[in-house]
Length: 155
Image (cartoon, rainbow, N blue to C red):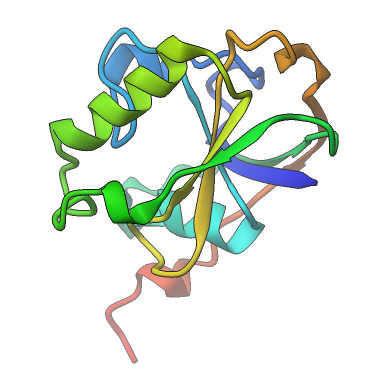
């Protein structure tokens, strides 16, 4: 399987979880390392685009493709356990607690979670502390210029 991440090239192109640890996000609180990936390139773009405007659009993004071997353990999070407002922005502490606990337990290398941006699509949270983390590899990195029409108010 391949998973995808759209990232600004001003940051190192590595799988570490450090960025998420510094700021916290929907599925992790500050201090918990986690790597956010998307099931496809379009979702990776959507997950980033919701935080940008044409005025704040950096020109230095790249799409990263990560290969996940078939034998890697993946937990699919049961959406039924989520609070009804799990997908609000900004995120809430309930989803952070779930993600933090799953990383702490360290049973799975990846956790499949629903996207808050595109209903019916999924993101993958990579646990950088799992014993099989080293089997995940960045296999492709390509420049990704945003199409500015995405951010246009003109129709």
